[in-house]
Image (cartoon, helix red, strand yellow):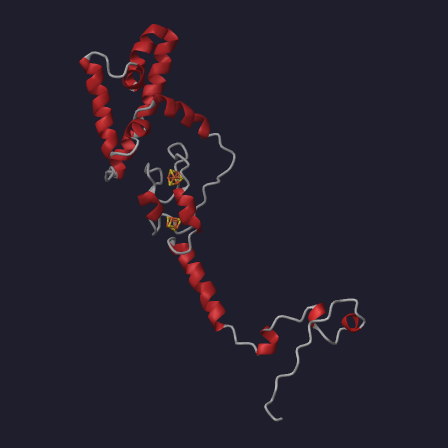
Length: 208
Ligand code: SF4
Ligand code: SF4
């Protein structure tokens, strides 16, 4: 089924909802765990997986609506509503390495990775939001692909042009050097230390 891409402005406004849900649940849990458990019904898994939809209709309706949204918007629940995803994204801010690589053309003008990122975690300016990235590596395969990434295509064309401009060398320069055992002038061959190449009889010239 074709997936919808939300307009960037709306997408960016929906991102923080899961953080608000997480912080809300955390605050309520400090006051009353029983209340937090009721509010944790925001997660659809109890209804869908543990109770297999054998519940009151408001719960079933809520989970049905989430499933329908997920059909059209990839990982709708995970991207916008999941408090666990929000909790896990917070330590991701403390990363030590920027290992998701970018070219200077990313975002300006090239938008390819941004358009193809399955969860829209690449800003129109080209930088990646690591909190939203699911590490699918799609943008990293594009980064190195010299047939799909415009930056790498330019580099490949430059390399190919340079190779085409190289002057053609005479044949004896391009021939690979003789190996020790192929060289009949090698004294080691003459002395029988290295096996000499088989001697072929000269071709019949057709004279006699
Ligand atoms: S295709 Fe290449 S230049 Fe374009 S956004 Fe991706 S990595 Fe950057
Ligand atoms: S690794 Fe995947 S999810 Fe992360 S920014 Fe790249 S394309 Fe998007």
